[in-house]
Image (cartoon, rainbow, N blue to C red):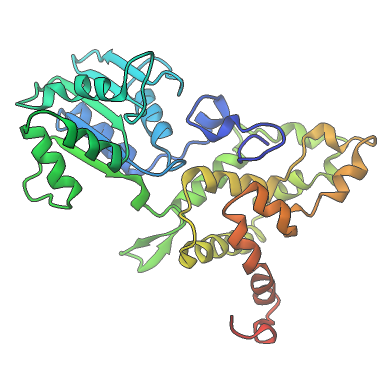
Length: 332
């Protein structure tokens, strides 16, 4: 209920890993694992994260902090400074384009990048989330031309031929979460979506839906209906394939970039709806029934979810395909 922008219940699940639910449902990728290994092996000293709002920069850094064994980091705590047991000092800035605690963004960046103007020591790792515009402005305004500024300019211009092997520039905007190419199988993989839904559904060890088994409203609850559908071994594959095709169709239209935040929000909104358990009591059941078909309501879709805005245009086509009647609609 808190996972999508515009939720009537609030949107505390839309930023970082500040709640237990966000931590439990975070989907780790190969990028998370590779960067963790390189830090522990002292192969990297400076990591710059690019990406749009919602691409998962904050969550990525918070998850990395957890893997490194650092104290729990809230997204409101913008600056971190900790030393690992092996002597590596980890410093992070979750938003390099903004001021913090009375200090300007420029002042913070000057201090953050200072060790890298010459030859940085091996026992430090600096992590920063900042977009290319603010980073380029800082470079232009910096009073000296240094080894670091030369490296960053080359990176921003797309030249990685002379890149320092200890620097990493990661643009989360370039990754597709709704489908990747598996070259070995020569097929589109949907590992991120698979993992996300699996975490939403839980398992035998940690099942967030266990109380639903004895709930008196289970028979009329749309969220529980979706859980049963997604856990059904016969129906699961069909539902998942349609869900994947829907997201990939939105991605291929190119109207929006599907961020990690929006993907989590869309899955929550589509499968689990708008209502809490208490909304299914006899006193509120009529209100729930009137809004139960939220997915096919254009105004609701547009207001709640940017993914669902282009999706609404595709719904008639998707329905026709699912019933084998594509020819009746003709080509778009």
